[in-house]
Image 1 (cartoon, rainbow, N blue to C red):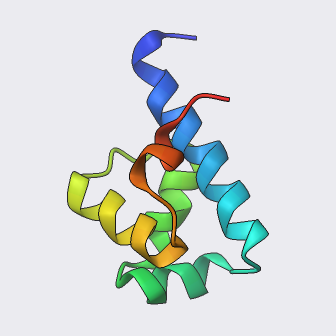
Image 2 (tube, rainbow, N blue to C red; image 1 turned 90 degrees about the horizontal axis):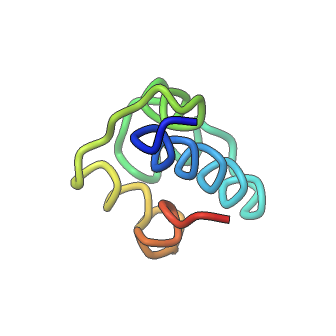
Length: 73
């Protein structure tokens, strides 16, 4: 895997895991974060390239720090 892809892969895995552990659907998380559901889907697929503002909205909605979203396994 290319080193540039690692943050996106980590984000995708961590976001899906945190969302599932909180019993949220993509739609529910999107509403809580004030974002389109397609944004959450893109992040979970590893295709998204979120701004810091989007990361903060998602982390706040999940009640998790941004670094937890981006951390390696």
